[in-house]
Length: 92
Image (tube, helix red, strand yellow):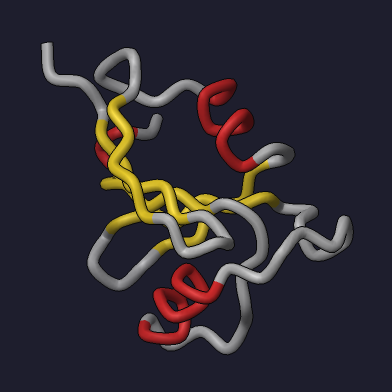
């Protein structure tokens, strides 16, 4: 069985590969990593950036690397808190 794999990007600049429990990522796994409600941001290469939907509201720390990713994808916004990048095939 191939397990789902993603990249966790923290506000402190740590970039770490994560191997999940199964072939698909569960909603609870995602919520634990982003520490709250989930928002999906589709990237040009077909991958998904997953962030905390209410991160700005709660004043989570700025995430420079994840912000660079969305800017490179033509978006004019910024990311706070943890972010996960993964291939869409790992999400239902």
